[in-house]
Length: 496
Image (cartoon, rainbow, N blue to C red; front, side):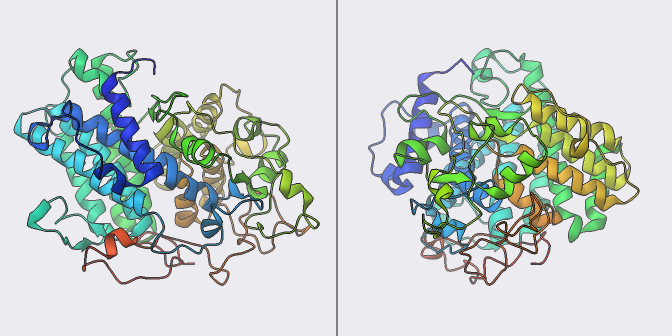
């Protein structure tokens, strides 16, 4: 997006400062006289602020976790920055910033904007903020299982809100989306309001009518995604929810929900690039053999987009303690190809089609083969590449649902690097695909693309399924749930 203004620049600078310095540092900065106080803040100010906070965390710190746990990337043996993630050895001191910024930054902004939008009949912003609130909450629920919801955002009235079950939060968020969709939101945004829509309007190419149609599609696609999360534990409700969407002729995203305001200037760079390259001075992440072996085996042209070369040198997942004498290639391994102006994706066009393909395969509500092909095409078009049509890129059209689901999830997994890496981790937790290899990737019997347990994992062969509650929450809120192992699935996940 080429259209930027000083306000967006200020918001992004604050978000990146939170990412790199810690949110407590933000509170030490004097409040600018140019920024309105909370009682005077408007949805036009709060909405882009929340979006940048969500993008900074899901596209930065949490994107690193997702990329490592989805086995796109692994820790360089010449550095230490991400060893605790790669060895599944997270502590309460880890990821305070992401949790705090998503709650105290993004969600607080969305909720205040929602309250103000309701009071002023600004239904366009009500829908936009409700969808982003649901999106951000979904990420937190999928990572932590239980989070404050019904008693959240009460300020001094309740400094220790209770934690709600993830399933209950999901149901409430879907109800909020439905209520926002039931309003008369479908009114053109003004030219000024259009510019603060960083997902669908900030580039000036979409008409105001297109913007609200895209928000409706984003809302429907997010609901579809949430219902499909439920298939293991609430199968009947998941099916009913999906069928209700199709019975209502719901439209789904046919373009990406993406924030594309970043540029190679101080505090305005893509968050994962800012964190791993500019802040650390060097990218400590390296290509994982798990992923590169699959790309190479299938002659996937996206490998150059993901790693900057058609022949990356990888590291076997989590083998960061290997000495150089044993694994000299590890010490010249290829880093991911992050760029300073890369966008942050919330939900890609490809993911939308793959979600629809899964719904069609499960419930016969559409043409799964055609939707799968649309997903593959969109995934390659994201990098201006033609999509292959044979081999693993062709829909199997099997009479066995799991065969079809496997193909869909593998293609989703292959589409997420440099987009929304965390989603690959969630999909594997929900579906079991990619499969877990019975051997480590150094074994000649290893099959490309199958996930391997980290060489230096500390969880006894069990894969991580969640994050631990950070100190920033546990030290302040006595209602924080008792700690459980990170190998315990969240409410919708498959058992380990």
